[in-house]
Length: 108
Image (cartoon, rainbow, N blue to C red; front, side, top):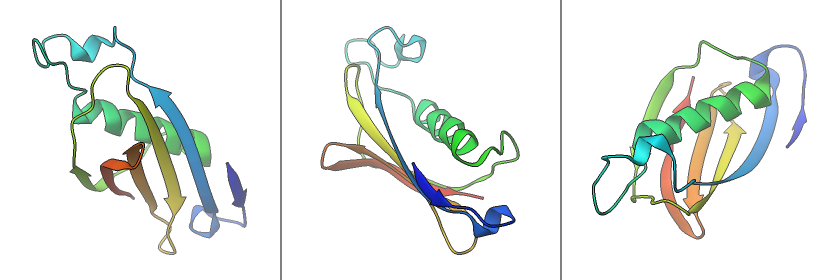
């Protein structure tokens, strides 16, 4: 994580990347879907919100302004989560599986 902080969240310029490997025993995989487990999108968004809280110190009050999901993710997949500030003060996020974008969006 690297960043320059000036007073106020809207002045925080930050890029953060975090790797996470989906555990095979992740409770959210049970029944989603039998025979081919897929990580629910809400789990990816939860990880994004946790990382946003860690990166900014703002633990609550985040709003998901936009979110798009492009590919399914299964157990054992290592994902790269990237957060970056935007001039408006919002946070953009991207979730990647290697060279493939899995999800992206914006937090406000």
